Length: 231
Ligand SMILES: O=C1O[C@H](COP(=O)(O)O)[C@@H](O)[C@H](O)[C@H]1O
Image (cartoon, rainbow, N blue to C red; front, side, top):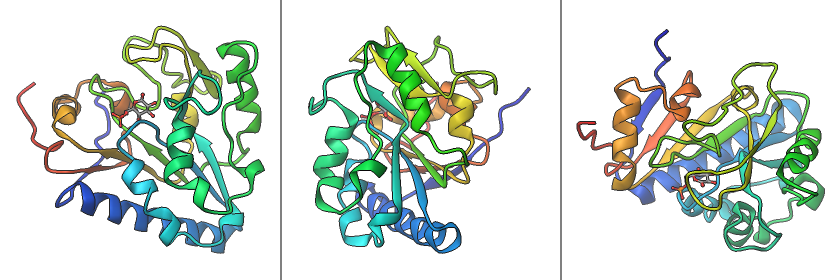
């Protein structure tokens, strides 16, 4: 069966993309809080969203109603510079009063499997308001890597432990495909020439992990990522 195509958006450059995406997040937060009293946001990790997060302290309001979750986290000790929450803290959450109990970081319990089970317990019962995802050069998103379980069936756990990830560090946890799909909106943020081949393969219909989550998603790209080289 053909995979549903997302909506592709090319922005003028990475700076304009970061500004527009930060404004969109702040707008969706305000709408969610006005309509349902809270904003449940899943964060992308890696380097790409850092410049978007850095703009949020200026744009966000009513931080007491924001609830943050991680689409994936590296199984590393708190404060480790390669953890996704270290980047988020440095760029954004260290500068605004989001209640600590609503900023859901990965706790390092016994092993990644136990950490995944513990993280699944803190997820909200309802759909997320917005899920942010990046794109790896191999087509992964969150820590759903090619050749690994994607957890797309509703019977799969909401959070998966990952071992032997193709990108370091090898041990991670990730929200599963079906749990990421339980969202009102999904935005991919993709910048830089290194991502152009993965975007091209996605557009050509390859069943990359990101493509499996593409139905109804918006893909925000800069011109370098959107160069469509021949796969
Ligand atoms: O390892 C990861 O990779 C992807 C892409 O990261 P980037 O540095 O190329 O932006 C990211 O979306 C994911 O959250 C992260 O853990």
